[in-house]
Image (cartoon, rainbow, N blue to C red; front, side):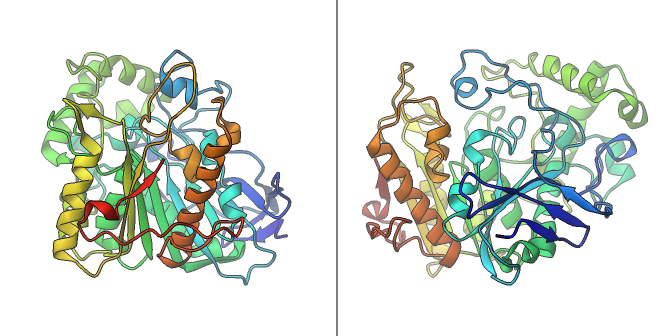
Length: 447
């Protein structure tokens, strides 16, 4: 197995996975630490290192006002380890590879986590890439700046760096993708056969990376899980980017709350202070979910422009094969599943404008066990796509594990060829998943 690799920046030593056929490399720096004067700036190339760097542990998670360990369904599901270090120095990625040598040219998955662009991290249990990698692909999960550290806007930032005034988290994602293209061959991966994927805000991130003209030709295909979302309430519609001027004004108001009058002053503050004050500030919002005062991606007029959802359905930028869908009980308002409605509109537009583009549409709706009777909630399908059910506290049974095996099989087949059809890793032929052309019976049901 490939236990040691040499990247363009230095040598890395990985760790044998639970499956000895897979090697995991965790906590690989892909950019300079965004601290001090690099806070609220575009990511800078990582410095090379001497010797062999041990890549055994995840890097710190991004600065965020964590939801804690309360009774919220997401806390119960994933936010269960208060000991995971949190630091502004957070630009690290992880690689799982089954390669025995560097010349295998295996297909590559680059994954972006979700969390409303304000929470989340690659070290969450469900994102362990070992099961997917064991099916013959290289898995990369990219950490990026979020919340106020990742998406602050301010007039002074625009004056300081008009080519990168905000959207630092999206720029981190792009830097992680570029690092992967530059270095993944050392892990036995094929830089010319990359799929980008993500869920929720991670799916929204995929939308933004697809819409970015500077990414033209960098990815072969994309998967967006519960990440095409349009809300009627402007404060909750975090996936539709606001214009830069409005974004900057939000930063001006936050700085007043923070008690600073300049970027220089704000950069001198301890990162934990900025994080904590941001959490307090967010609670002043009048919307029920307290999202109205938080920072999200915006139309920066430079790298990430326009509405990325429109770009998906109406633009030929990175017009690649796409897998997407929703869970049956997520974001239901007034009896309407907001994600389903958004996906329907977007894919039907895409079918009309680009009928030759392969689209694969799913609906995830099995019974989810647990004393909390959660329904098929937003994000629960992640255990299935990554086939990591064994890490979850829920009493999943054989039928759930079978479904996870099938879903991860579809996912890996799509990553390899752009077509999810074929066999799962047990050699079982998967039920046919038809391309979506606008007909309801072409939506595959995972239940």
